[in-house]
Length: 452
Image 1 (spheres, helix red, strand yellow):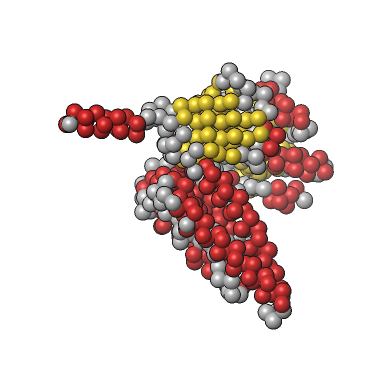
Image 2 (tube, rainbow, N blue to C red):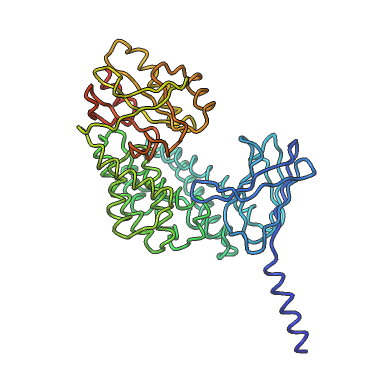
């Protein structure tokens, strides 16, 4: 009897630790390879490549103990992919390449069925409630339509909360249940005046998210909730310095809540720094670094840590009025271009890369502005940090960049990039004839001010 018990126990334990299989079937997809990645915040990290003998059929078995629960993406092409949740169960998905996202279905465990249903419900709920609340704000309370719209809103909220709190919570410990519980949209009182709703949302937007659940790092929960909360403080009418102060207050709320879990705290801090860096909110980055990164000795991602150090070095050594380091760098023909020999009342130095999305948006606009103001006494020296000459030259040609274009093809490790403590692209310095820094513009509006 004792031996039988041990045998059953061994079989049970073995079954529990068996790696699970991903099975994805894509109709009308003439492709035999795909890339599997997992989500961390807003970035997908490559896990493996999948090659299959049958068109449109992809099967993958995780190595034992080699996968974590969370969001995954199987990428077929740049425009076709499938997102799903893995929670230590087999995943069976079916879809059509002609309508990849809307035609997806799941069989077997309910995890992904619940996930896809929630995505659809969440989108519809937000659109419909926003529309109904707008209508209620415009209609008088004694109007018949007012009561009809209010009834619709109440029913919408009731259905939404039933899905969030009941339907999705059959297994409260499952990844999908914890995810939905944390990312649910806040429901305001249907009788609340519009002018009070913003204050209510600021006070309650983060109520449901579990900052102590570090498994949710492998989803968009913390990043989406952070953006949702920060958006409540966005005010286009405020000047930049006041807007940054508003965001700083929001950052305090988010990060102080995140401190309950060291991994979540680090994850959200990295996300906020990276996000504010993309939008040029330097004061907020300084604020986060001084009050959280340094104060709490947060171990940031190595790449981001190096970026922060370069950022601090750039602020220290390249202040307004400082003479910039000399740049001697080759153009497309190999001829050396010396910044010291560029004559002009002002010279705009712009560090960029062809693969940088913000550069792709900024440089064509800057080029149009430059072409319209060629009579001015300003030169532009554009330093690419590309490592592929063809990518660089194709970008220059595609955008008809008629200014001085140079690159040493050394990327972030090039002498100019190092001398200028480059930590992000695009980065710009406006220097005068003595090569002293006059300004550090961060957008096209600031450049236009100096050109005009």
